[in-house]
Length: 120
Image (cartoon, helix red, strand yellow):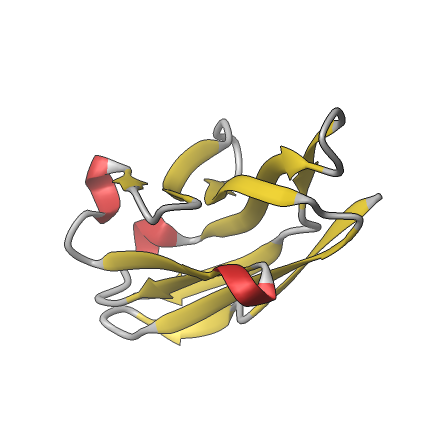
């Protein structure tokens, strides 16, 4: 079993910054990629940013230049630094990871979600 624990969400004024963290634990052989998704009320879940095991990154157009994703492979942890936050960034942010529990078994898991609320 692999679990993800997120932290760092909260209430911030527009223009402010927050840093989200997500730590993976359990039976982990390797993690191929980790990412952050978000879901605003009444909207579908969307990819915010993702990073591979060799630090190749991918960002949604709406956050490019404002958000930075990074990871610490030794700690199985991914971070999302969010700067210049806008009210439209308000959403529940979910961490995602997929990889291998051993040489033959794969996993994909989601965190419980953390609320980011940006006030205008």
